Image (cartoon, rainbow, N blue to C red; front, side, top):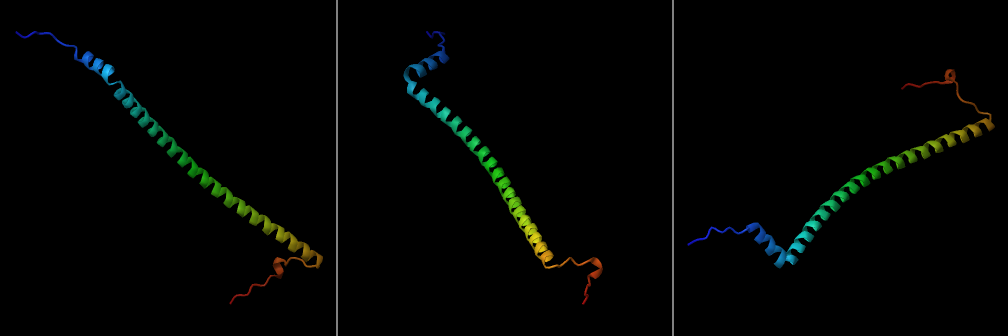
Amino acid sequence: MMSNERYPLRQVILDDLTSHNKVALLLLLLVIVSAVATVWVTHKTRLLTAEQGKLIQTNNKLQNQFIHLQLEEKSRSQRIQVEGVASKLGLQAVKKEQEIILVR
């Protein structure tokens, strides 16, 4: 004669896991934590790499502007020096009426 007795399968499995496989459960938990940490670190690294790229572009633009400003400052200071020497020598700028354009 068969008995119609039902075993609580879910409870049996949980009892088996918690009583005999504590190390396996701990390792499984550690693997999951490690995987989540790896995904998080990878995400943060990508964000920081993108931000670094933007900062490098901004730095390059600022360096170019600085170089152009230095060239402009040098050009203006040279023009002032030339004008100073010209005035000492009694030279003056050519007027529009005095200009002659040669066409070939």
